[in-house]
Amino acid sequence: MFLAHPGGPYFVNKDKGYWGIPKGLIDPGEDHLAAAAREFEEEVGMVPPDGDLIELGTAAQKNGKIVYAWAFEGDWPDGKEPDCNPFSLEWPPKSGKIREFPEVDKVRFFSLEEARENMTESQQPFLERLLEKLGNV
Image 1 (cartoon, rainbow, N blue to C red):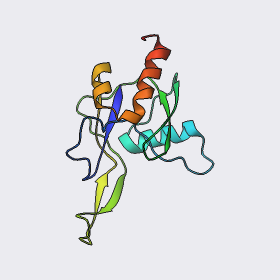
Image 2 (image 1 turned 45 degrees about the horizontal axis):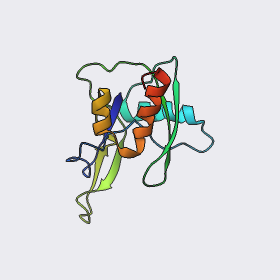
Image 3 (image 1 turned 180 degrees about the vertical axis):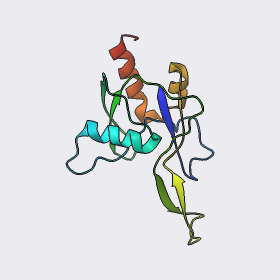
Image 4 (image 1 turned 30 degrees about the horizontal axis):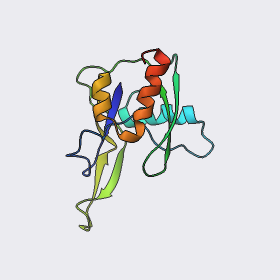
């Protein structure tokens, strides 16, 4: 399973339980699937392949936001770093200094067992749904 690790200073020393699918916000009037493809490209720097998509439904994050997910078969070139949009943040806090950080600082494929160990808890249902749809449960 291909997962992304959030960038920025708050996640630099956090690993297990912080990885998740590349995701983002839906623009007003935008189709969920179109938003997912756009956000994938913005967060990792690669256009998702055209082809069969497996709809994985939705999951609620702890903050109440709803994530829509699809799976697809693809490759990630060895050694390729994510090329994502930056975000601005005052860092260190209350310093008055604005710095830019990548939305995603690393991506990689995980085995099923590794994905279970590393994925954020709120997105675990996507992994189980994918396995069900592929007939591996």
